[in-house]
Image (tube, rainbow, N blue to C red):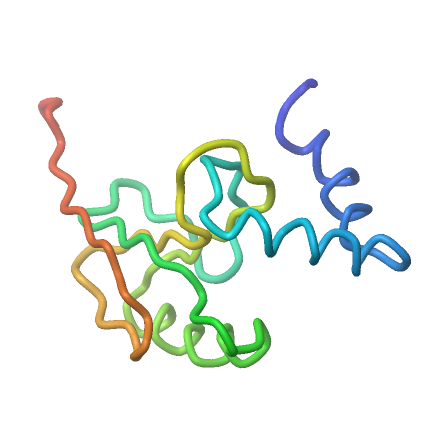
Length: 121
């Protein structure tokens, strides 16, 4: 493909109309996921994030409610919330890029990784 944008129609089609239920059933079986392509869900890309926080949506919480809880946190932190679109290898569903550690609401279990540039500024 020419780039990730070429996959956008495929990703949108996978979760539309009559494909929604079969997609959701297959996605439930892939809960552990494996790598993936991510798209920006909320906020602005962070040029050189100091902290990457990986996490999954807690079971029993709708995506609508989950995003409603996360968006003000992302805004206050000046962070970027990335969401996995396609599963390809080991990875959690969400990754937040931020300038500092961000507290997430329970029952989210975050895996935060501090980043440090190895290249001179």
